[in-house]
Image (tube, rainbow, N blue to C red; front, top):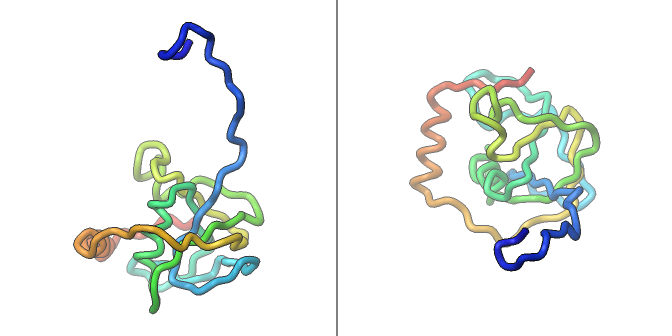
Length: 143
């Protein structure tokens, strides 16, 4: 029952699809692909990533846009995975309980479906604190 009536609660719909987001500094257009093989945004080792990352939360994508390497402004895109996805072990049970940021990764490209043009970023002090944490040398799990 709902707390507003004595009637049984009815389910009238179910979410079966979610928007996925990706934050970056790359200037992309709908239809373009975001591919694995890029240099990661953190870690001390010089390497290329075998994954691309995506999230169901706008906040996590905003962090990706703000922390991305490169020049230019951060951008947040809606994306569609081309292949299978898995939970990102950097932000799930291997480091945090559950998957609080709803973060995933794939070995296959992500197709850009649109851009989120209006979003509020974090303040510069918070971004600096996050970047300082990356300088501690924590290496991403990328196996």
